[in-house]
Length: 159
Image (cartoon, rainbow, N blue to C red; front, side):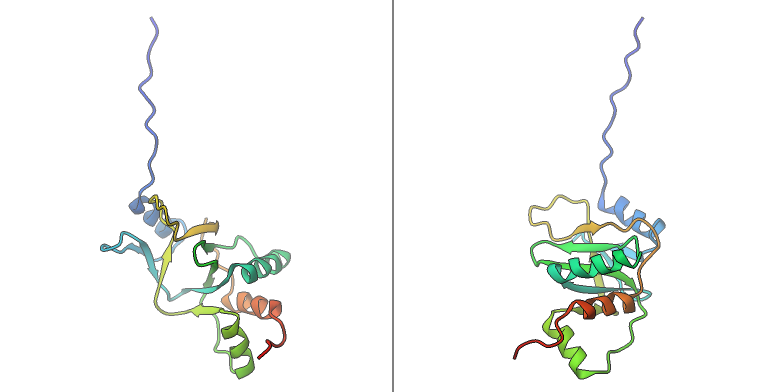
């Protein structure tokens, strides 16, 4: 007599299961925002550095050359931006010229406020995706990511 195996049920990931993964495995303080269903985390011990994708690719290459890995990087395809999740160890930039260079390059440091993370919900707009997924507790130094971003910028922008 042949036994028939029960059908295999596909595992469907939910925002709740992804949020739990972020909390337990990555130690990210995530919650689900009830009105939107987005997975959010409050910046604090974990911060972020956001920049245009073209610059971010160069920064990632520099960090890879330095052996800084794994890099949790969120992509924002519609905006053409990447967000590096980092340790919140960035000190204020005191030099006005350096601040202007970062501002003109659209480099944003997020040390306070909410950070949205990729969700498994299908979305035709694809608001966020992982360029390099968070797979554990490692986050690079925010100061090092910012240093690499500054190293990739031209010395002066034309006026």
